[in-house]
Length: 458
Image (cartoon, rainbow, N blue to C red; front, top):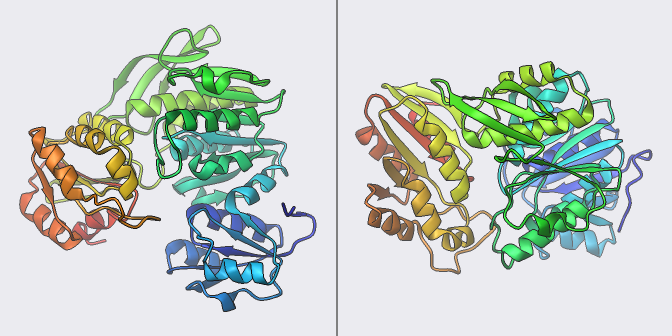
């Protein structure tokens, strides 16, 4: 595989430069005096930000965009082999590598690279860690899969040995990384267009954990079913967190304030103390345990950790308050897996409202078909469910699945559920249906956020 010499800047071209991770890597290289350019399908806030930083972005992926002055082409897992730019790069014998391979090589330049993995919670936990390290004035470099207000985007370029990034299991991309500390928050079935079954997923997480050196550390949720299949044979230190008092870090006495933000007693190393979070939900209690465990490894003062967790307000699209109109509160959340939906709606139960209305946009045909019953059960925690059509992302519909199938399942559970093929129809329905003191949550990994923003006139 091609190796980047970070002491000798070259011209790197990104196919899909507007992606949340790709744009961050482009910024890191530009900061290191690399010549950076790239393409994307359409203009966005991220591509505008790159352009403002002097990075050349073209729209539309065409073979003529690949010129012989380019030294390396980077692409994402979403790019197919017949992509015209990728085909052109190979025809010109320009080295290519995946986003994950480049990120792995960047990690080698830091003394303490941290990779946050898990089926759920990666963005929030990475952001929590970033908040703590900044409060502790440890000046980290951060690559996060969401927009974090305290760093003004999805990337922060620091000057220390600390590098913190998310580690996604899809297409085994996290196996290209070189972490010193790894975190595994949870492991469940997902991305079944790539993985065969849960055994296959557990094997991948074991391979990720095995990347850690002997003097490294794995911080792992002890409640993961079949955890031994991940930890067996590891040479690194293993630190556990979770619900049981046998783990290295565990909570007790969880309570919630009027905005569903938890306070709990943290138990670790034979001591206990009170932690209050600035974000909602019990799931974030466990995310914060992982963040505290990492902070202890890095020597951050507990008083600083407590302050950072209290100050942390989350990232965009994670139980994000969008606004209120006509007495209706509108939130938005990225949840797109049944477990995430359940966690978000349970958090919402502690948030002030009389009725909870969830507008859900399923993400990919494969995921929708695989978890149809689980989606129905999770969404039934809302008082009223409104379904948009499936957001296809990287897929085409070859499975004969539709949001109508999900509507039938939810209705069979006795929950009012409505389906509309267009956002305009959903918005008109909500204008008629919503009442004062309703809590409206738009939910999904696609573009469903636009519905709430349109209602608020944003």
